[in-house]
Image 1 (tube, rainbow over the protein chains, first blue to last red):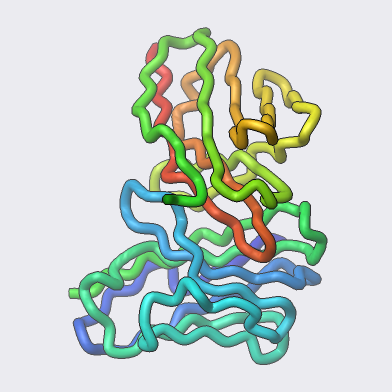
Image 2 (cartoon, one colour; image 1 turned 30 degrees about the vertical axis):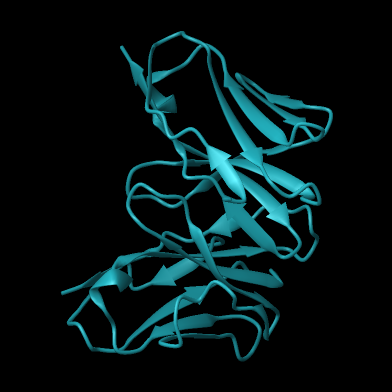
Length: 114
Length: 108
């Protein structure tokens, strides 16, 4: 399809395991964002890419979180040594480069850490 | 202080009612504004951008007040299908800040 695609839709992992979440943005979208959304809350910013450059990672909650977008298209969010508090929905969004353009979201990955 | 403040509700209104949501933001340098709709267990979807002069899309009207730093969304003639969480979003620099969302339930 033409929208933002995320995989997997659901991920269950044991505490301490590493996980990798994938985002395939809309073709041609320069900007890519990762968000974490807890139940009953709005999405919280994690990190932002413009093409392959990670311009802002101020929202990453700890050094266990790592994101990359090596070719300026697909992005991966990796969480190492997962903790229960990492359980959330992880949303990816992309947008055209212009500053007044809205973001378009993927379906999200629902991560549960046992 | 949070970048974006939004009344979480919930708002429970009868079909056909008019309902309004407000949202305030803290950074006067914020440059663009949006309302998103999020259904349960779904991703946020763009409802409408908010322009300085105010804008309307069918039953939905969005307004921006830069002096008071708030944005609003008015829904007229509410439908059952309008039941969802409405998120206000403020773009400042490279970042997009979300409100916590306002829950709306339209009752038959």
